[in-house]
Length: 194
Image (cartoon, rainbow, N blue to C red; front, top):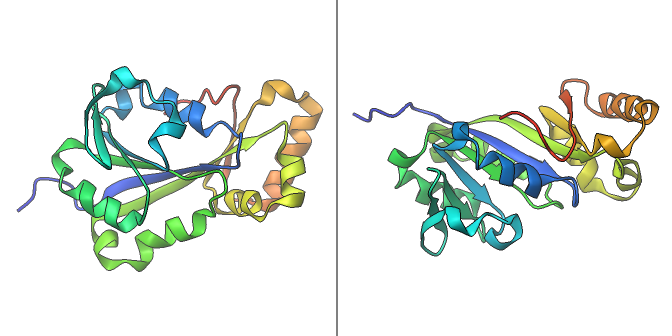
């Protein structure tokens, strides 16, 4: 019998292009609370991970000196999660970072539609970064940004230093109209607690 908990918690980090996902992810992987996390990123090169942190790398999964395990999604999320399970002793939590143009719906469905994945992993929530300075322009032109906000459990209203207080209040009201259930956190430079 395994000594690991039945379901491993997973958070999905999403946000439209330029919202600050790279910044927040780079900050998170350096924090002690993330030392036992597996981080699934869209592409290793795009994230800007400090190369000094990488201690062991194979084609898809690499270990870092701070304890994190990272992997890149070049294909199927289910396959990547299956490969991660072979290293189950190295992590107790998973963070999935999507591309800026991703609809988080199919990612979330993975944990409900696939019985094997659902028996090993539990979706804790979807965190969406929102670029406070540019989201109003993106919402009129992009279905992806609307979907990312609608699916979020937590909205990180980022780059708040670029918008005045009245503008932030109006934006927060608009976001609440789009998703009344999400918690909204304001941040500058994607500086948020784990």
